[in-house]
Image (cartoon, rainbow, N blue to C red; front, side, top):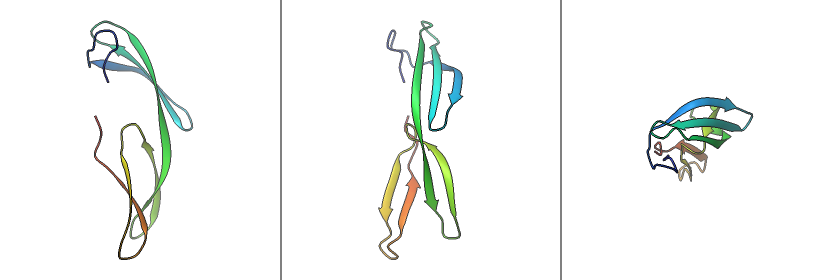
Length: 85
């Protein structure tokens, strides 16, 4: 994420507020001092594992969700991709 005023990438998180399905972050540019507020959606995802199911909170802005069908068993699996920066 870059500052819209000076195009610097040094944005420091000043405050984080977590709601039910939303994360609000207030950032400050280390170069020019501009404050930015961002809103990130969060989704609950059921993850299949061979022994049990577990549910996780993931940040949709930072994780790529890949869904695919297992050709052998026909089960739907959800896996986490690499972090996007």
